[in-house]
Image (cartoon, rainbow, N blue to C red; front, side):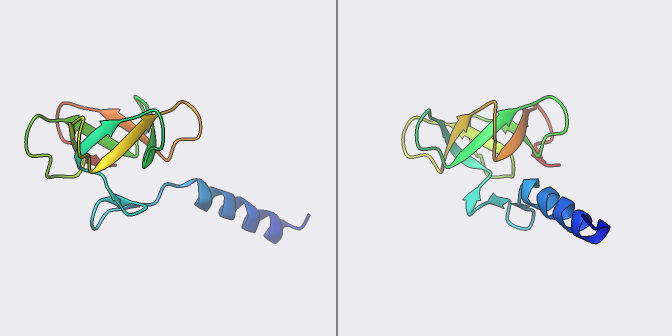
Length: 104
């Protein structure tokens, strides 16, 4: 295999594995990364893996006003986003924090 072809394939794989969080409007595949969230087992909008190091998004759980990136209010009814926690093949990696939520 030639070096340019190998480099192209490596960069393509690297690019496909990188999550596409839009930093201008804080969305992932059209879903807001803030607001009212419901944790589900079936039919999620977003699959997350909870990590301690190198998160894509730092999340703060709030009781009121989930109006900034990474601020999630857990609800049972009428969620903006349905999330499933997984160990393998997540869409994004999340770390739960007490201060300064947002995209990293």
